[in-house]
Image 1: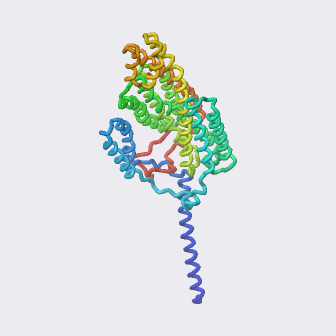
Image 2: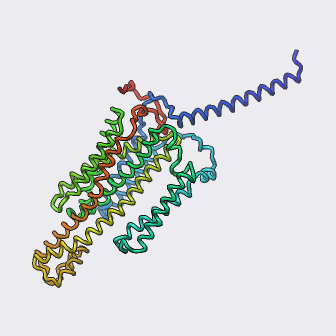
Image 3: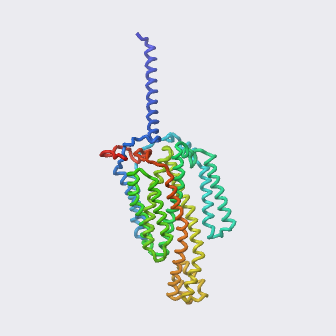
Length: 459
C-alpha cells in the first residue's frame, strides 16, 4: 500500500510531466508550421485552387487599367473614377485574405523589429541616389555638365553609393542585401544576383517606353489627351494578355530562362522599331509599342518567379522588395539620362531644323529667332503675329520641329536597345529551375487544398 504522501507527490510529478508535454507539443507544432513555411515543405501534389474571393481581388485590380483613360475626360469623369477606385478597394478588402503566417520574426516586439532594420544602408542608398539623380537632372539643363555644382552632386552621390556597397558587404550581414541570399546553393545564389541585374535592365527598358512614348505620341501624332492615352494602351493590354500565354508555356514546360530571353528580345525589337519612327509613321508606332508590351510581360513574371525560387523561403519578401527596388533604381537613373539625351538633342537640332525650313520657305532672317521660340513653346497664336510668317511658312516650321523631335527622341531608344539584347543573353545564364518549379508554395495567398480532378503529371 502506497503512503498518502508518496501518492500526492506522484500526482504532482505526473501533472508537471503532462504540462511539460503540452508545452513541448505546442512548441513542436509551432516550429513544424514555421519549418513548413520556411523550408518549402508543402506537398507538391497540393494544387492551389483559387477561391472566388481571390478572383474578385484580381478582377478589382484590373479595373485600374481604366482609371488612366477616365482621368483625361475632365471633371465629368471624376465621379466614375471615384467609383472605380471604390470598387477596387472593396474587391481587394473582400478578396485578398491570405492565411496568417508564423515565421521566426512573429514573436519579436516592434522595437526588436526596428532594431533589425537596416537604417544605415537605407540612408547611404537614399542620399546617394538623391544626389546622383539631382546631378543628372540639372546637368545640361539649368547648369552645364562642366559646372562645379553638377560635378559635386554626381561625385558625392557616387561616393555615397560606394559607401552603401561597402556597408552591405562588410558592415552588416542582415541588411538590405542579406548575406543569406548568397549562401548555400551556389547556382541559386548566382541566379539571384543575375536576377537583380535583369530587373535593373527591365526597368531601363520598360520606362523608356512608358515615360517617353506618350511624349513622342503627343508631339508627333496626336494632340487630344484621350487619344494619346489610347495609343499607349496596346502596350499595357499586350502585356496583360500575353502574360497568360507566357505563364501557361512556363507551367507546361517548366522553364523560365528561355522564355525570359525571348521576352527581352521582343522588347529589344520593339525598342529598335521605336528608334526608327518618323513623323508620318504613327501606325508603325502602335505596332512597336504593342510588341514591347508583349515582351515586357515575360520579365515582369519570370524575374520575380526566379527570385522567389532562388532565395531562402524566410527571405522571400525581402528578396522581392530588393528586386523591385533595383528596378526602380534603374528606372530613376535612366529616366534622368534619357531626359538629358533628349534635351541635348533638341537644343541642337530644333533651332537648326526650324531655321533651315523657315528660311527655305521665305521667312525673313530677322524673324527667325522669334519664330523658333514660338515653335519650341507651342504658342500657335504668337506664330501668326511674327512678321513674314505665312501659313505655309508656319507649316514648314511645324514639320521641321516634328522632324527635330523625332531625330532627338530616337536617341532615347538607341541608348535603350543594347540593354535589351544584353538582358536576353544574360537570361540564358540562369540556372535550370525545373526541379523547384512545382506546387510547393512558401507564402500562399490561400490555404492550400487539392483541386478537383486528378493532378496533372509533368514530364
